[in-house]
Amino acid sequence: MSDAGWVKSDQQLAREERRRRLALRSATLATISTVVLLGVVALIVLTSPGWPVVRRAFFSWPDAKASFPDIARAFWVNIKLFLTAEPVILVIGLAVAVVRGTRSPVMFPLRALAIAYTDLFRGVPTLLLVFLVGFGLPALNLQGVPTSPFVLGWIALILSYGAYVAEVFRAGIDSVHRNQRASGRARGLTEAQTMRYVVLPQAVRNVIPPLLNDFVSLQKDTALVSVIGVVETLRVANVYASSNFNYTPYVVAAMFFIVLTIPLARFTDRLTRRSVERQFGTSS
Amino acid sequence: MSMLRLDNVWKQYGDQVVLKGVDLSVETHQVVCLIGASGSGKSTLLRCIDLLEQVDDGRIWLGDEDITEPGVDADQARRRIGMVFQSYNLFPHLTVLDNVTLAPRRVHKKPRRDAEAAALHLLGRFGLADKAQDHPDKLSGGQQQRVAVVCAMATDPQVMLFDEVTSALDPELVGEVLDVIRGLKEGGMTMVIATHEMAFARDVADTVCFLDDGVLLEQGPPAQILSAPTQRRTREFLTRVLPT
Image (cartoon, rainbow over all chains, first blue to last red; front, top):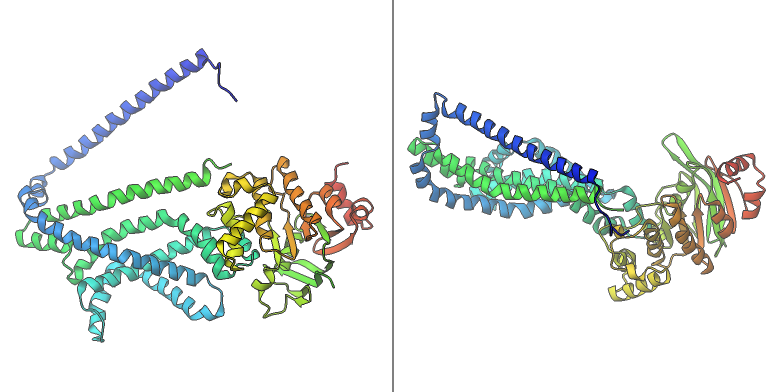
């Protein structure tokens, strides 16, 4: 169809003019209400009786400057922890999810193990797990068991997040239409081949947004390993805070985490929106 | 010896008995159309033949092998059968070409180059050569079903099963898919086709079978079953579906 010769009617022009005016009004209203709200919050905080004390304890510029270099160095430990744990978590999560989906009798013990693993480690708070692994594992005095707090914390995070990620992958596998499996089997593919070439590629694509969400969460939870003595961001902030009687390093540490997580969170939002569009959007 | 023979096949889901002792023989090069109301057991029958469902009694013979016997390699049996479903045949993450070559490459271990050459030849035969690099969601429903037929044909099956392959299509797309099946008949393919398209069944079938509530009530040449059925239930069904 050609739109040549289409002159917009007066009615349409008037309508568009009216829509423009309405849009301007909405934007003005949004600005005013935001400014008012922020003003009220600021007023309440700044006029509160404890504000002068809070300002000195949490927002002291000299303390922020003094603690910054140490915290920045410690934050590198959190990043290392996150970057090295993540790939292992993905592998474990995927393996556990796939094993849970098998039906062959040979796989029974592995299947039982996978179920026990997810049930157990999804149920135990991550902080508690960090304590148990961090103090319990070395106490066994076994040959070859690592004693470095960094490695123990790394193991605890992997155990905990592996269970979560396994469930995410399992949801992804379930989200692939069952007829896709039938179609794979009908073409002569074995159960394993159908999983590998038909189900998993689609499943993984479907769960990328929730997976990224778990990663954001893991980035924050790397701070939990401070409780077993890993010298990372929270630990360093803690040491500084208690020796100087000032909490500003906590705020500095929080800033580091925020700066790391916000980009990933935004990226996740964008991917989620894209996959929703792909599902309900333009096709046919 | 029949290419495919069903002997007293029973199937139930929970309390519901879906197939009640079906007997059916399909000879080489023969085209059998299954007709009957929704829920009469047509799809279940086809799924049992392709071993996607386990029969609860009876036997299914593919050539001289009883494929319902426990311990039979189901993957091996399925490789001799091609099946096209109503929908979800194609894998959305793969291109048309990769869809067609998946089974030849992974199941029959053909080298990529050979599999692709054969696939392109087959796609060309069905007028789909220019779609080879597209993903399925770029294709019309009719084109998708034609590609699905190509996928099933890519491994040289001895029997093809069609499970209401045009039921999910817009009316103007039905013809092109049925034409593809007609083409297979001319090539001598042995086929079992569950369909709601009575005119098509009359045209393409050597034998029409009427399924009613899990019972194969009558079968015969299309002219006889569709024009002069002996069973009251068949007549009732046909008056409902045939334009008067």
